[in-house]
Image 1 (cartoon, rainbow, N blue to C red):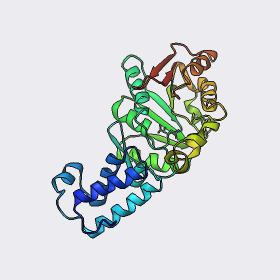
Image 2 (cartoon, protein in one colour; image 1 turned 30 degrees about the vertical axis):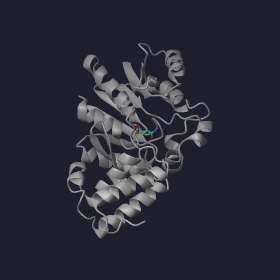
Image 3 (cartoon, rainbow, N blue to C red; image 1 turned 90 degrees about the horizontal axis):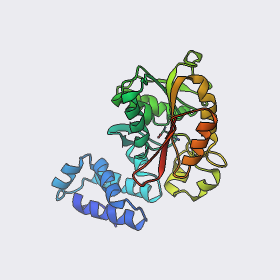
Image 4 (cartoon, helix red, strand yellow; image 1 turned 60 degrees about the horizontal axis):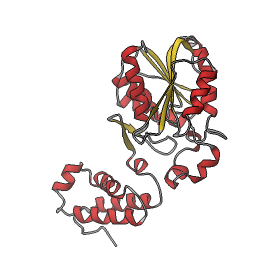
Length: 284
Ligand code: GLN
């Protein structure tokens, strides 16, 4: 089967067919996004011009994209960009793809800002930078700081901040290690969507995730809680009195986080669920 001498509409049909045969659940939307990129048209134009022939160049590109996708590479990496909170983020190997569920974490903080003076915030394990960039875009912060242990991730985060006109101070740092000491006791809030998958569950993740996304963005240690323990414990020293911690958590980690936060003296603890009714955010 070849995409040569096909119309745009025919190529789309074939793309869907191929990704469907490859077992991709979201085959329809993925085939379409990849074709949009290959021909350089947006969704509307793609449909309006469905009867036009696909250029040889676009056919070759689309062929390549479909082959990559069939091999398991995530559509988001093939596209090189993905949306979060309505903003564009560059993504690729070495950085976790921003997830829709993480928007609940950002929204929780933005809501809290309506009633609490949250002016300075630190994001730990920023990855693509999706959290601090969207916070600084939609919120009212004076200082937004973000750290990641991965230089590669910081490359993406820095680029994403610039592209979205967000002013963020980035540091290459293992947790709080390289956060400037002047911020000790000065932060209004700390946020993190840390690696939280229990080590033994990693093998059971989808190919797309476990073979392509960075393991150090997923592995949360034996019970998945290693990073929460570290941040909850050390965070106290970096927060102002009355400062807040906000975490994304796994679907079954709500109770563990409630206990952990309470053990370290945090109060006004809350757990929020996602649209599927599963625990998704913990704060205190
Ligand atoms: N903070 C980034 C995100 O939410 C990366 C998280 C991670 O790599 N665990 O997408």
